[in-house]
Length: 196
View 1: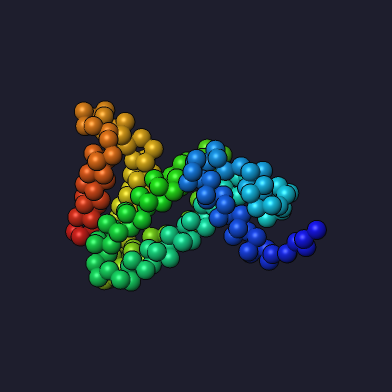
View 2: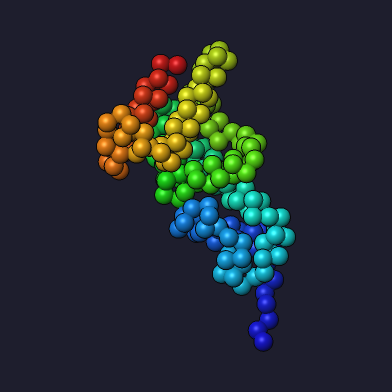
């Protein structure tokens, strides 16, 4: 019998999260199942519960890990972009990829339906700092934060029901129309930020 290699808790957690993300991408939140992940990794479901306490704990950790990575990307975008308003297009592209292709909008909605509330990770603080770098009022900063929250809210909603909402105003809900709509909204938010 081969000897099992003991992994550090950090490595074990990362392996579990990586596998959970795979199932999230493939089938959304319903596909993220503790027993399936345990079987894939050759561990017991008790090992996953040891690290994350429950399926909801695993899902929460998955969202937090994505948020941590997103904040690093937002920081990089803020540092490499001269104008914070220009960065909005890049950030919107990252969010669209996260929400639509990797299914994190669905995960956030699933967690919210389970009673989860965000602790406030300050994902967009680097862009807020860049946009509000010149001395201004706290109202300006609040407006910028509201616009970024609007962008985030829009992109989550657009992923979930964007096609249906376009169809409700007699615009086709196909992927091309949805992409044009996303680009239009991002352009409106960027333009508004330029005037702040």
